[in-house]
Length: 157
Image 1 (tube, rainbow, N blue to C red):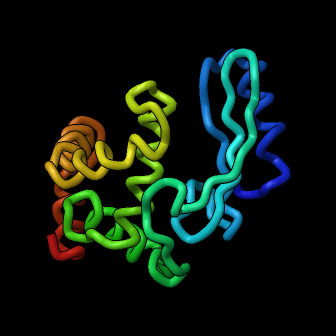
Image 2: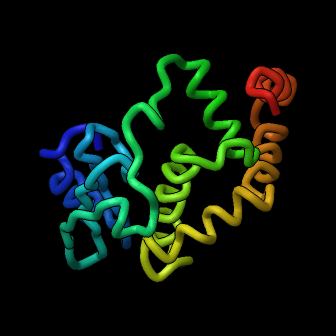
């Protein structure tokens, strides 16, 4: 979520819409995802209850990063950073940021007992190449694979 004040109302809306499980997150450093820079406020919803809590990078077993470690200043940089993480070329704070958010998805999907327990499987999916393989499969079916090849080249992949 891009603003702290909308976390609970959005979780309540998802609940009313019949969502069985979900996380609405706000990184207090201003990111709209689970943060590896600072604390993250989370509204976890199930069919019957919304539980609000705060996690810090250290609670999730990842190193705290600085904003400059994960910042992308242009659209092109952001795309290159994403591809470098996905293809296992970036193993630093940007990988941690992706992993902690994939871990959140694994947790919501019931594939991990907690966000923290989802981090190792998330990193394994990336490092094994399975995440990149699925991404390429998707691009082949839905997108422009030649363009992905160009972007990979720009990113040094």
